[in-house]
Length: 140
Image (cartoon, rainbow, N blue to C red):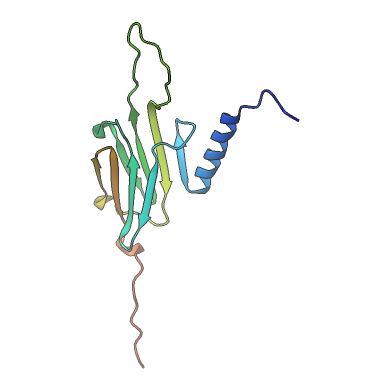
């Protein structure tokens, strides 16, 4: 039975929030995950990149606590001038915050972040004691 009061966009936002929860990511202050993030790892740690076009890098905060990384900031709002009217207003604005739970602890002293051409790159190094280490087998 069709329900005229069902909002498909609200349902899509709920699905996206559920997926973000399954993937270890949480978006606060927005219906969908912003900013878009890629993450990959190597033996030293994890590298994350986030798309932040038009965001002042000085307004972005990256925090690390044990194995949780948080990226937060604010997207500037475009105000209408006198006599203007919107034809489309799809670009988001306002505060954003995303948290990522990583599979191991991060050494906060070695975290670095850089913004270039609207892409934030965050380098997160594993704590030395959490890195896998090879054990030599002695012959008896």
